[in-house]
Length: 237
Image (cartoon, rainbow, N blue to C red; front, top):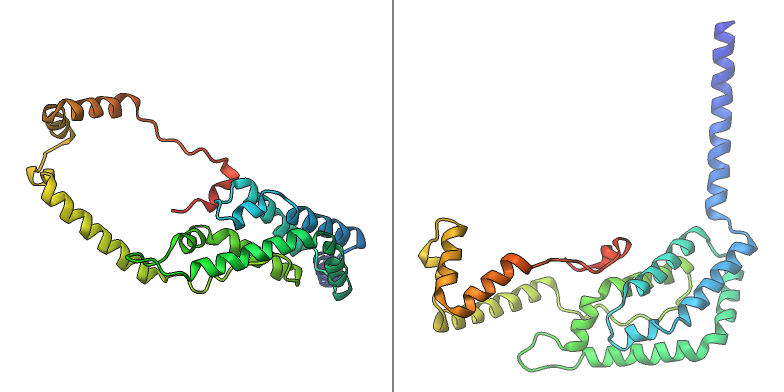
């Protein structure tokens, strides 16, 4: 009886596992008309969000900008649109063609500005803005890929300086600053303070200004990050 029960349970497990997996896959891949309609509404809302064109005008994206696109990406990855639904999506956002045209115009301007050369700089202000906020524009690329439709125009991110170029620029800048410091200020590292107490004593006796700064930093210095916890993933490190 025990072996019969074991065989029965084993057969039931082998039958239900594929069935459950199949049902689970259908749940993930397939989408209902209601889900597709909701996703279309969310796309329209993101396009018409007045905060989105601020980013295309070289204003750093806020955590609200990131949150809107991040939520849209999560929903787009859950709801897989078929070809007919993609066509319906393009038709539905045609009502927002004025906003889309504006974003496309601003994107073309970003591409044009980032190619302008600036003397003594590796790249200009527009390129620096794109580089500093590349995570946001890559999120837009992921949304387009998840939707299967190029909804959001994305600036050209291929021509931004490579990390090796940035490192060389940073090293040159540091060398320049070191030379200026050596020529204008005493290198206090040569004093080889034994501990923080010795350094504080030196700073307090160096000048009235340094003594005041030391006192302020010891009693009033507070380090804070004014970002909600859910939005800290995009803060550059």
